[in-house]
Image (cartoon, rainbow, N blue to C red):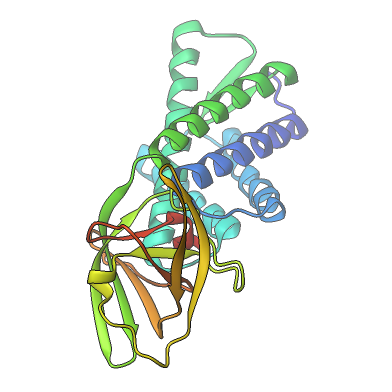
Length: 262
């Protein structure tokens, strides 16, 4: 089968682009379009290994892992060891699943328009078919991510420093909390008055309108000296730039998980 380098590169740029977008959806990491395109172009160069002699499985796996780490670093940057591992695992996993599905189809159907070697594939493709297939995959991942995001997630601690007091409250990541302070533009973390206690007199308190299913009211806001969110599972510690809102939180500090990506 004749392999055209330009088709091979274009195919892998396209596939890498959507795999990176899927990675961003799965991990909730911000991804700028330019960095996504640049990382996809860089990652496509590894596809030239399809032209190399058959590599041992261990060496091929090491190369794949190195490619995943460097492509993810180029796309997302390095924002701590935990986030790098999470993004790399998601990207590597998406690659592994994609390659596995394609190899299964290749082994079963033996199509004349497809070549598979060293875990890279070449398709003498219909561009329309490729666009439709990746668009469907992206839609499915987006749908699953949206369903996942609607489920509040425990497993966090929110540390609030207010003057000479340190408050530690169990955190709840909930996309339903989309409150933002109109004046500062900062996201609002909702806590119960009982958990916060008395607010020092020299701390400025503001009010923002709040609409709920039971009606409208005003919520008290204030800016503490420091807020730190800790992931109890991974131990990752994230300082966040937010304000505290006093409301019905049932012993939790409720925050939108997007603030962990800022």
